[in-house]
Image (cartoon, rainbow, N blue to C red):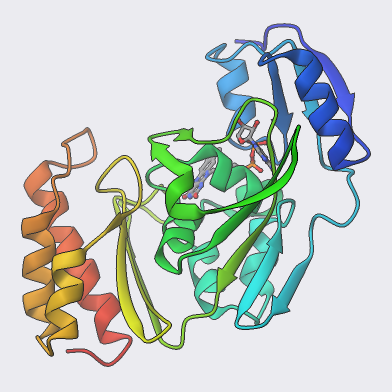
Length: 269
Ligand SMILES: Cc1cc2nc3c(=O)[nH]c(=O)nc-3n(C[C@H](O)[C@H](O)[C@H](O)COP(=O)(O)OP(=O)(O)OC[C@H]3O[C@@H](n4cnc5c(N)ncnc54)[C@H](O)[C@@H]3O)c2cc1C
């Protein structure tokens, strides 16, 4: 199928994006890497009247270490995240995104805005307590990543908003484990372990509509329990739904195992 007709605007600045989206009054869409949006358009699951191409806006693809965190511009491609060395957890997670072609086009802002429950960057963002800076009609605001994700493919972004950067705190210790049916497939389950401000956070992707903290497992680890006990608690506390790719019990078991593997990477056996 082909996309429905739309107007195309190549924006030169964030202000122009916000202006064009405002004029479109809820009927405009940002085009970043196009790796999620273009299939949606081609299937006519979305029919925006205007596409605002943000790819030529200068200064939005920077990766910048800032006290205890790394700031990633919205237009940073997944492949750049893989190559950078400032934030090793982000580099590891980005390596698992799709295939080379997807990683060389897809962007950080696009992945966070798309909010796919199986995508890697939203889990890392929630896992390290990242903050997202958004430009909108009333200027810039910053929200916690965990508050941004409302459901599968659903965020608290308003129609006229654009993500401009994401600030990922640097964990003092981290682990990352993922299970996918084939290399490059979306994850069935992702587990991120990150020590932030002295606390170990365990966050899962692929088991719920939004990234989910494994709080029972976190408590077990905080009390000096084993990774095996944390894995068992994870399987008990989540409520995944079955789909074509796996039954609920299968996902529970995989989630437990991914938590065990990610904990092993921070020395918790
Ligand atoms: C075959 C295939 C396999 C894939 N596998 C994976 C995978 O394993 N893991 C994974 O995480 N992803 C995967 N993806 C998705 C990929 O990571 C996308 O790049 C990403 O989800 C969207 O980024 P994008 O820059 O391409 O955004 P686009 O497709 O351009 O946009 C996606 C959505 O976000 C909005 N948007 C884009 N940028 C912004 C912004 N700055 N502010 C506000 N809204 C914005 C758009 O309007 C649109 O609604 C896969 C995609 C394909 C086609």
